[in-house]
Length: 83
Image 1 (spheres, helix red, strand yellow):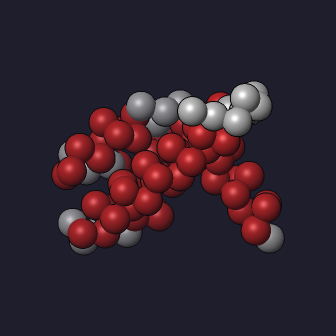
Image 2 (cartoon, rainbow, N blue to C red):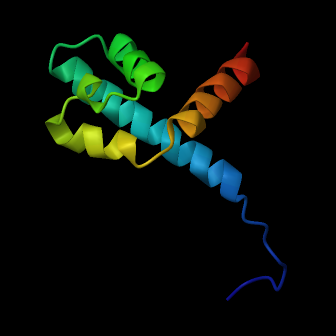
């Protein structure tokens, strides 16, 4: 079944990937509805007001699954890694 080796499961990396995927989905849904996705997501992160995020494709529920601080940390970390 396996090689007998212990595999390391990086929870932080998995969470980062989940948040990144959620942001891509929410962004695509906002753009599809004609919104500027960056402005809407920034508005949500700064204010905490879920009204910035459309209910379209369940986007509002998707983004609210994560703490805004976690979302911001993923965005900042990804930016710094790619800068």
